Amino acid sequence: MEPSNGVHPARPHPPSGPSPAATRTAPVPAAGSAPAAPAARSDYRQGVPLPLIAAHRGANEFLPEHSLAAFRQAIVEGADAFEFDLRLTADGHLVLHHDRTVKRTAGAKGAVSDLTLAELRELNFAYRHPDCAGNPEAERIPTLEDLFGLVTDSGKDVKLLIEAKHPSKFGPRLELRLWETLRRWPGLDVTVMSFSRAALKTWRGLDADTPLVWIFEYPFRRPPEGVQILSSRVDYVESTPDFVERSHEAGYQVYTWTVNDAETARRMAALGVDLVFTDRPAAIRGTLAG
Image 1 (cartoon, helix red, strand yellow):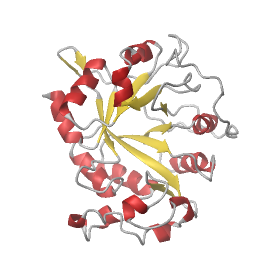
Image 2 (tube, one colour):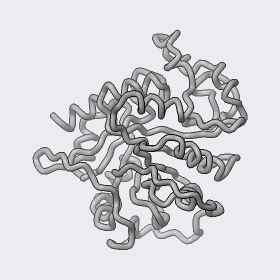
Image 3 (cartoon, one colour):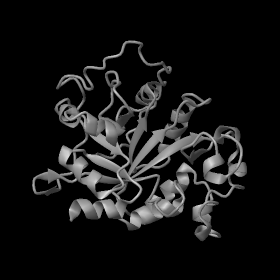
Image 4 (tube, one colour):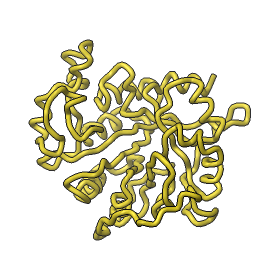
């Protein structure tokens, strides 16, 4: 996957909902109808490609998800990429958080979009991890730029797989804010992901070069234009035997989530999946390389 900081100012496309027409019989377009996918890594063992390893919300098996502590651990564990979810606060800051509300992660009330960054910083996002008490990198919700700083300071070549979370009351402002932020951080290897067709269309209107991932869970319509990568759950990939092969023939890479055990990792590698999301980067790398 090539670095993706070639931003091009343009008016974003207005967001639009998915087409009502559904095509359940053809999970990917015919070969040649999609743009070329980013190059896959060419590590091989016994003829089977080794998927890239992406730390799912950081290496969060024993650390709070999305915390700087979890991403720092992912660097230690040799993750090829970081996967994380992006939301916009009430006062316009981009923060790393999966859920709409902070109930599960911080044991508090409120939606991320209704709270300011200062209010979020008063919460303890490591409350379910008492062994992390007193560690600000575990307890504090990080901004996108906090994570960028961690990656830059590490000196590691880490791919950043950013999921724009929708629906959001801010609509395309999320993508616009991300685009503005990336312009201040040249040289990062960024890929943008979303379940939302509208979000992907908005991003492509802002930026012509960033790799795009369309995420889906179950049988789906034709992928949005401008997408190079398809990402789905492990159970969908396994239940649709030719999905990976057909996707590759059509010019797409395939990512899958969440792979936390050895047998699943081996099955995904055997199918030729290009990247797996995992909470346990070191363990899954050891499985695939062993």
